[in-house]
Image (cartoon, rainbow, N blue to C red; front, top):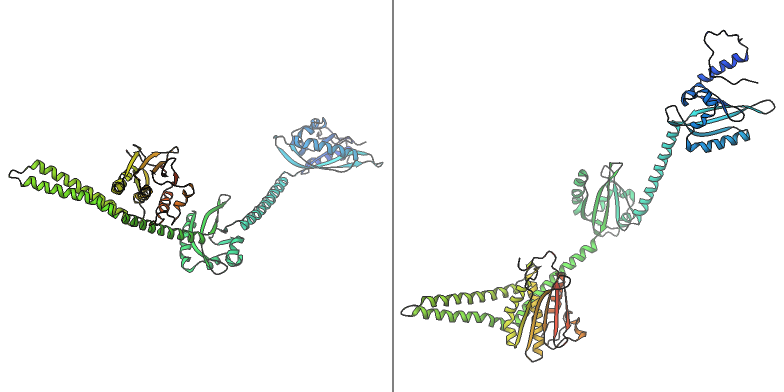
Length: 530
């Protein structure tokens, strides 16, 4: 029987008694050759125990021949590979077939490397296995290359899946989507874009899409996009784009720079058709102007109805000024002019003229026609102004005006003239309601803050009342119960209050009359005493 190959060299100086044909001499040279080959070689007994490893293998593991023969080589197998490797090795020993497996083996430096381990059985003439001869091939670099290739393939697959998802998402998105490369040229348009323009991808890519832009907007597109592109900034612009049916539609285009791996990759953008929105905005502006015209007409009409009362309001301070002027002349015309009395008379003249001037100023404001101007308004002041303007009308109809005004009412951001119009409409509405009853009555105006912190104004009358079925109808345009009414005053008043973020409503009183109330928000408001 053959002796196992030995890793132990001959002792120096010992005389060799071996001849060239001696088996021991052949095995000695074979051992030298195995140690010299550029690979890891080993042999094992029929029961699988390793009996020999060449020197390269011993150098890698850092083990001695005795350690290898003692079974310590198994400890070099990576824990995650050990159980599977041993199970397969045992199955091979049982079946007596070729063996092949991959496993990580620990080197002398403590690091693990992947090896391809193969073994073939050597059989005696009668078929019995006498030894196993094996080799270990270092495949660490190959493994890493394979892993990199696998990861690259996975990345490519993920990229394809991502592109597919983006394609599906983009094609089902309710907006037009486009992409550019780093050269600022468009290289992708989604299906909604192509459906909108009625063109193919080949027609649109590059600079083809510009053919669909309205000639008057082409330069504006370049001016909006190119500076943003060079600065790598987001942009937004509006222009007209030709639809498949030939109509130019307004679109709002937004674009943002996109990056891949930290590197600039181009722009992604979207376009939304805003033609209908623009038309709606134009229509709203037209209606707003019309409402403003109606409001002005309403003010003028109402002031016409109050012309007699207003004339009386103005006549009073003018007549008083005339009387005080005559009195002043009398004091000055005496043999010894009474300068003190004359001075007091002149002071009264100044007060009367100032009062008349203020009344005229308020009337001019109400007749004024112009754009609404928001400012901080003290509603208590507006109430007092309107009482002064309409006080004579109330007195003429035997109506007493009461006020309950909160002392520190917050100011509101509003158009003063529009609020004056609201008060004028509500007060006149209450006066007319009381007058229809042919009895004396009261008109009460309150200002306070409600539970939500808003300003709450109420105008209550003791008139004919408001049936429940009319509580909302009175705010409909052209609905009126007055023979000479236009049916616009309350409708315009509600529009004014709602445009200020408030609410106007009406309700019948439990005893007599009706109450009209409205709220106004006081966010960021200043107090009346500020």
